Image (cartoon, rainbow, N blue to C red; front, side, top):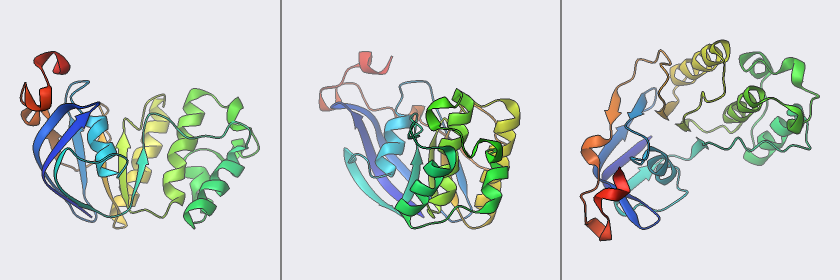
Length: 201
């Protein structure tokens, strides 16, 4: 699914991470840990192909990335949003998806009229219509209540059991049998590419 060797990550020209090796096989998950600002989001964006690495080698299957923005179109209904994403990725909207993300009663509601938690559930539901087996998730449970976190964790475990894979940056326990990677040891050295200690405080 994904292999990275001696990967270096930067943000705005400031090095964040260096010397990172990653391997992720089908059916596996990896939890990213580390303090705010260390580079979890930047790493996920590089792995998703949204920005180039500073250095190193990267091979990855096509991925679905869920970041801090949910990508919900406010003028479209919940159903229209999902069918739009499904059409964009050449996928479909499974019947079980409505129950998995508790969206059934919201099908006809405009995206702009959703609460923060409902918007997040809809944003996460798009992962299921992309057809992508590799998921890159940046704090996916933000704005979710405990019941919604449990629903998402169930769906994610089923995705892994079906041969999918995921890398998740989260501070919430999702009940996954997955190793954790602490990014602190890979913090870029002060002075690299003009960086300084202040960039990492």
